[in-house]
Length: 180
Image (cartoon, rainbow, N blue to C red; front, side, top):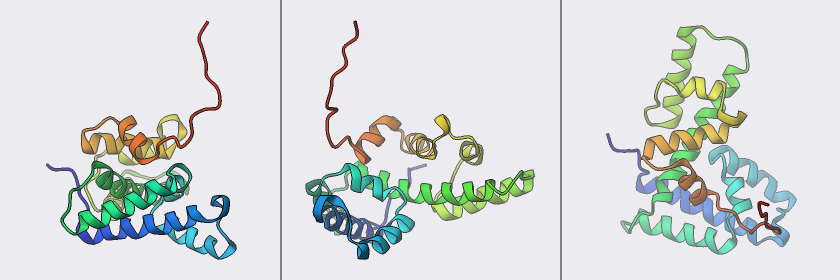
């Protein structure tokens, strides 16, 4: 089975998200004005994880991604990060919804099955049986790690490769460490 891939309309949505993030990044010191807070909340609800992109991607990369996603929607070449970030947002929405339900207390097997089906509906693509347990007890206690690991399996790529493509380090560390 082929991994899921965004349709042209979804690529246009990504392009718009990146244009909005680039405008926010261009604001003084990257700090949004009061009017921008509503925009940030709406973006984060629609594209969970995009605020991390705002923090890690510089303005030129945000602009480049907007142009690349728009070109891909028009039939141009697709870069791997496009499918990865599209799926990341969808999977993170499903993960957050699942986590909210799990936080309400213990669930029986039928409730877990219903929760898994709802997560698949939100994600828009099949999720394996390990999804709900991974959300209940995420690796390293981090939902983002669970999502990135699942993306790695879904796309047959190392989760570290996906993570560095989606959320690269923006600045090098101000120090170096040398082992004795």
